[in-house]
Amino acid sequence: MSVLSGELRRYVDLDAAATSSASVTVARAVQDFLPWYSSVHRGAGAKSRYASARYEQARESLLPFVGADPGTHLALFTRNTTEALNTLAFRLDLRPEDVVLTTAVEHHANLLPWRRYARLRVIEVDTRGTFTPQDVIAALDQHPTPRVLAISGASNVTGWLPELARIAGAAQARGVFVVVDAAQLAGHRPIDMTGLGVDALALSGHKMYAPFGSGALVAPRHLLARGEPLLVGGGAVKAVSFDDVVWADAPDRDEAGSPNVLGAVALAAAAHELTSNGWPGLLAHERSLTQALDAELATVPGLHRYGPAAGDRLPVATFNLHGLPHALLAARLAAEHAIGVRSGCFCAHPYMARLLSLSQEQVQQFHRDAQLDQRHQLPGAVRASANRTTSLCDVAALGSAL
Ligand code: PMP
Image (tube, rainbow, N blue to C red; front, side, top):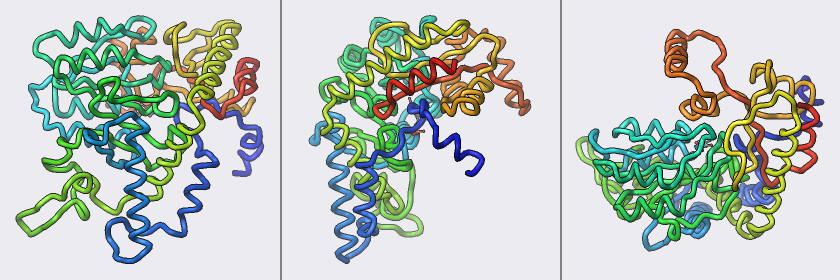
């Protein structure tokens, strides 16, 4: 800590796409609740009943936050987006011959759970790392029709926002189950699952100003009402013997183990704060950050940016500086300028391989090296990302440091 203390005092956080610090409002909500938190749905006492009520209120409040219909959808609490997508992929009862349509943009959390159970059909990206709604429609119309479309609401690498409304509408019209990875979207844009035609959605609290360990899966009630849960244990059952089990009703069936009621309260507080602050102010601020990032980086000699150059995007910029390995650049920004960015492949190896125009041979070589545990540096880039807590001065600091 002492080594870092000077750097932390001056710290410029441009790593918002990784994690957003908990807001003061969220911290206060957690602090107020701390003396009262107790086991949920497991005690007769007043504290336990109070904690259970707060937990269920938090669950209810997530539905309007993402524009879900309480008659159709149910929110499950999960640790994060990764757990939500793993749960959903398991609960959809996919067969090996089923096709899941996904995209080359995806974070590993929205690729690996699907690949475990079904065949992937992947929508490719152009050199800017984007695709069009027509590309999605063409892939939807290939035979056989996919069972699921699993797509990011916003890219964690480029901040690109696919045209969800057109894409989800086209998929739903073909009877395809639409899943949105909203890890990056939820803290930056209002979401209307019903209006868009989205069947299920996953999000992480730590990317929308709540702490780690709080996330959600919003999915159709009928899906969660039947079948076996992914995680099994206490709280998920009505009756157990050594050779039989009767699962609890939804949502308890999918929430085995003592629930993270503090996380639920934090997540609900974060969602409430985002909504009640009003989206227009946040959108205007973040748009000015995106423009400032574009302007600052455009003046840096030898800088190469990845991702779309225009259009609506989150305030995320991914780049390399000629002659400087990405990890070294990130380390120097930290050590010399107290600027925190991330470098590497951002848990999106296929997307980065495309953005960096890596050949198939190079990709295969990295897989071989990884198997042999060779510690040489994977190609990657530096990512600077901002959110509502970022100021234009922070972005200017990055520009002058570069
Ligand atoms: N999807 C996207 C687009 C992300 O950015 C992330 C986090 N980097 C995830 C999924 C996974 O989120 P978590 O680590 O909170 O499960």
